[in-house]
Length: 256
Length: 326
Image (cartoon, rainbow over all chains, first blue to last red):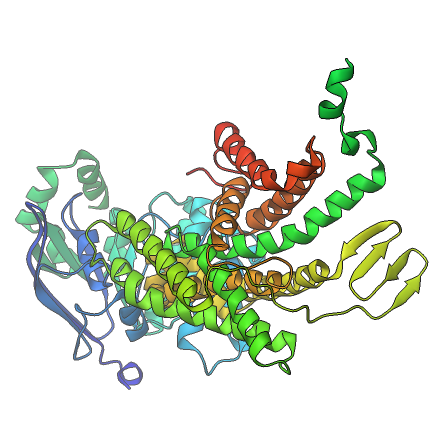
């Protein structure tokens, strides 16, 4: 059991993704070994979400391969990949809006836990929801929740399958500061449970504090990869940010 | 004015009584429950697969023929067993068809999926109609009644073997039996949709396929299940009505049209919408037919009322009663 001894390994090998004439990823290679929190940053359009979609199976790479724990996964379908232990959230929250919060949590239950009784699963769901402070909303329709609460629900739902690797796409975006704190604590706690995390965020402050390793994507290429301290002084990174998006530039400065 | 009287104020108008209206409403509700059952199947297919099945009426037709054949071949077979077999047969046809012909679309192997879905379900509809025409012939069949009331007399509520009387109002036993089975089937399917793992997974896929897939739900299997279940519900509706109506290979065509009317009225993809829509259509048809000026032609116009409603809904509130913005 790879989960028990923590030898998780995700290998992204020369992944290229073309959308028509546009090359979103130009041969990205990246290895994540053992549980670590990898921050993934880059200007808008750098290819962060494309990479996420490829890892989770929603997109197929044009060329290149992805391996997870010694198994090739880029040919698998998203639900297979989810069952292998990779969970993700979406930049724009995707709760099942016409179901209750609790039903959202239990819907994945059909797949992974034939050995867990319904009561056990409900208990597990409630524990997770309690931690994310949404347990009092369990009978509320997900569509009636605030944007931030829906984000928390998505983070909670993700844990129902016990993923080894979690990809969080902009978890702090558009969330009330108080809930941001909850998400921050969630990431730390999930990290303590020995899961690996890929964190995509424009919130530079949190990404620099949380990340153990920082990867910078720009125009579909990795331009820097290393400890956050090193990366933020990397001339190529500074240029990529300074030359582009003013808002991000501002964020980056504020983080310094 | 005398010359107008026979046409504009025929017997039905003259003798309107509250009993007559109540009777029409009750009859409408009895048939409406079955309409609802069938429409629920179409809604289920639409919400999960995002396609409109033009073969829905043929599942209804097959369901009826299965019961007819079974009850004629095996006289000893209990009625409910025939219903269950009809459900099994239609479920299987749905599952096999989905796997063979609709799955390529869901897998992205078809270039123009929406046109493909229309053509392939139309194709299924014709194939099933002509296969049944070849097997059963064009002449109307009617399955034997397999249900009789025990004789009762409780004053207000009386029964004969074939009819139940509520006060003065006679209600045919076959229709009551059909409605009761439909209600049971509706309760079972609603329980399944809202209280089981698989039901939640189906709902999840219908609300957001990708989000469902990344939490491990296989949307392709849910497609198969939804199409098979949808066909089965239509099959059950046919199975309970074959003892009431005459059955021909194209009996599913108007039935399918009614399902479309209902899901447009109730709101595409809405489960409560198809339930309420079914009951409304039943009552509207019943009242419309009951108050048609000329009773001799009234039955011939039965389907008109639903279609008028269909046009009105599209004009006034295209999202339907429970529909969401499209």
